[in-house]
Image 1 (cartoon, rainbow, N blue to C red):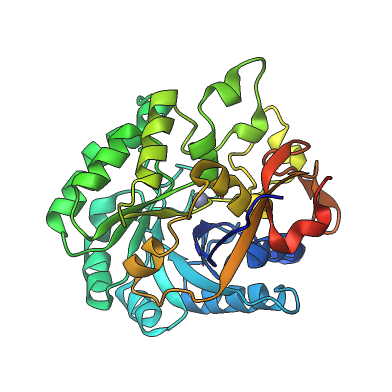
Image 2: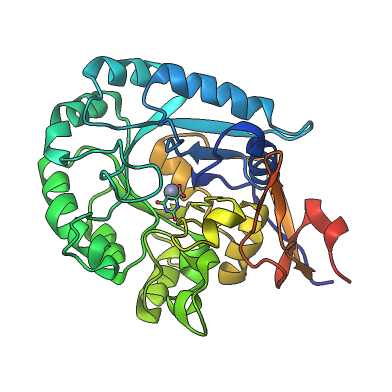
Length: 345
Ligand code: DOR
Ligand code: ZN
């Protein structure tokens, strides 16, 4: 066996846990890997208030397996109707750390999202008072824009005016997928950061479209060309503290993925660190997110060994459903120490 790779236990700065019985699977997987995670609020009934977020947090805490420590960092879902009072309540709650902006219609459960970013300006000003970051799904929804260009056009049309108007607003451009987004974040000031997913680091759009259509590789923003993937790998491994880990692990039941109109999302929480380690084969840049959010760095460590194991075909997902994880049925090179028992010899 090769030398184990030991690192400070990382955090996941972008995670979908969903709700209800599936929390047993999703929280179990993430708690094994990460110390903390930013919890996305796009539930079927979006998490739009501090009260809803606190109740959701309690359900997540109840699903943490015995013996594991995991802190969910809650976010609120911004709508056209979010009030200043709600921002004050969130800002004063130590468990709500950010707000999420979904352009209405951009992705899963985003129909209650924001229809016009300019209409949220008073809300953003209140967030600045509390130093609360705005987490952005950065894609335009304009039907005339090609789906592969939606991130780039979002940056030009919306992000650029926003960062110019509010340079002091902390912004995380979530799950970036393009060379353009990398360049924009690199050129931005210290209040602008981005998360990068394992699937956008490992796959280009061929993985979705060559040799048939692969619904389990369909996510949003959609996978891009190889040159974009390469720009992401360079950003993720380049040491710039404004790029950090966010899995965007987003489970959907198999039937909703393998469908005439399949849902967007890749479930990677079961092997997130193993997948990232394939790209880094060295330290995962685990302090960048904590430093950006102004949270303490983790002290505990976690180890991986270079030993293959085969990712299961599926996991139970709620009482009757199943979810197919990333790399289902395929070998992964790295194994989390805590999971050595499942290693294929
Ligand atoms: O692929 C995605 N799945 N992208 C998103 O933005 C949302 C997520 C989900 O919630 O399913
Ligand atoms: Zn997401």
